[in-house]
Structures are given as structure tokens and as C-alpha cells.
Length: 111
Image: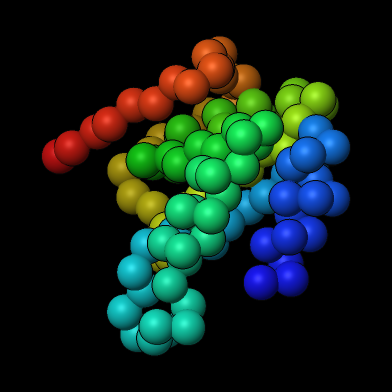
């Protein structure tokens, strides 16, 4: 639990512009129960000053990385699933477009 208190006390409460990239943001099968990233995502959601994002595809991931690059007044992060993405087409040298975020905003998507 030491890392949890470090993130809360040393990053979130001070609004430091630290960026987190949380891999394995789901229940990961072959890696076993010690690699379940779902717990990391649940912990990060509880941080009051942190912007947390979860892309549904590669193009959203690129835009979220661009968004994190411009957030300089609080912690931010994104969680992503293990594996390769599919079906996204990118222009050469595309660096993403920062997203317009609203406090407390969330979006639920189902396929």
C-alpha cells in the first residue's frame, strides 16, 4: 500500500502534473491474477484531482496522450488494454488533438 499513499500524498493532493500510463487495464488471462490492472484503474478513479481516461481505440489513445501533454496543473493518466489495436488509420506524423474535458465527465460505450 506504500505506493498508493505516495500517489495520493505526493502527487494528487499537490496537483503535480505527473502523467500515468496504466497498462493491462482489464482482467488479464495468461499473466495471472497478480497482473490484474483493473485494481489500478479502480484506485486511480478515487483520486479527486486526477484526470483519468480510457481509450476505446488507437485514435482515442493518441488524442488522450495529446491531452495529457497539455494538462499542466494536475495529475493525469490513461489506462489501456494489453495487446495490439486494430482498424485505425493514421495520417503520417499525426500527434493527436487534445480533448475538451469537463469536470466529472464520463461516457459509457457498449458494443
